[in-house]
Length: 185
Image (cartoon, rainbow, N blue to C red):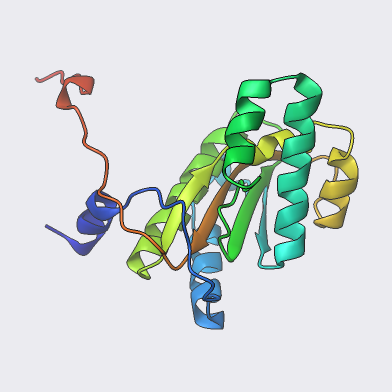
């Protein structure tokens, strides 16, 4: 089995991180992993926002909470608040991926976030892929937050990933081979 396959099979979603910051080398390698992801027609219509500023991560989390409150989803709100209002789980790095609206923006972002997740695991870091930050870019504070992040208004949030040194271990999920449909020649 190759190292790449072993990394894929060993990766799991981590939702607890130590206070240890990522090194410059780790950040450089993660940026390269994001940028190396292929895009439809090689358009490269993405912005990768690497946030290591805890105050900015907290602001994103607060915008998520405000968005959930505005929708009146009390069950979802209680779930977030039961985790201390954390969406990025105190990870020292939150990477948010934005794309120009197109048929392939979500697909391209999915490829990039998987590159980041596998790169993190190969660097012995934990990660969790996050859709919840999308709520921060749907509410009344969305335009201002996106501007603060330096992302042009024509780009939309696609997906995010929290990355850091794992404070917990988690067994990778079990897969069910019945989900595979095989058509043989």
